[in-house]
Image (cartoon, rainbow, N blue to C red; front, side):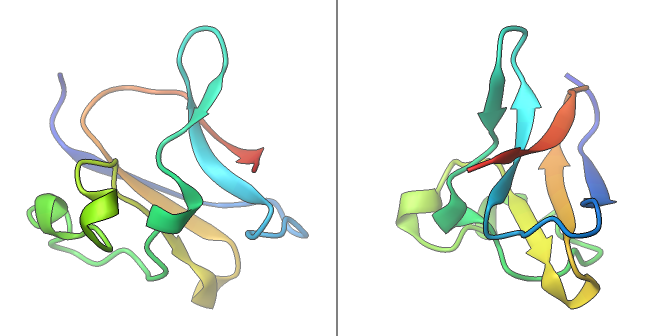
Length: 92
């Protein structure tokens, strides 16, 4: 277990954020961090790490990894993590 941190990156130009989702590699295949319905539609802001438990959209997303999409910067994705992972955008 590592310290909590945020991974943020921009998807490739031309990638439609409605057709991809942020995922991690579990050693055998790519798995979404969360469902599309639980992706926060907002930019990352300082302090989100401390608020991680209170950032979910609703009760259905409680306990899910906190993932966001900042569409004001095109295709900028972010996720709150506490371990080393391999991440990528995969098709939904």
